[in-house]
Image 1 (spheres, rainbow, N blue to C red):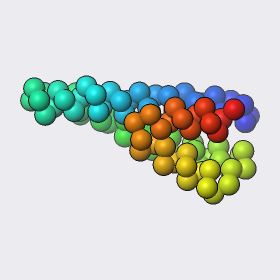
Image 2: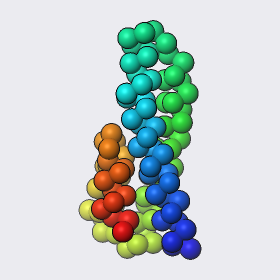
Image 3: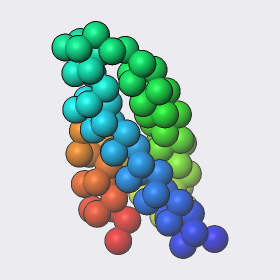
Length: 94
């Protein structure tokens, strides 16, 4: 159970980080430089859903792995940094 939960969290973490990078690196320039807001609608929605799932899973995985409050807050804070989920995944999901 815990191993599959960690595997799911890794997938969500990776997808959340990629969606954030796509949002910042491709969709936002398309919107503000080339006046093409459609990409932000699609990528933004996907990122928003993945962000919420990431936070819920971080809390649940933290409970299962007995993370301290500090560790949980670091993992959650990593969700707002462009490469943060990659860091959290490698540091806390060994």
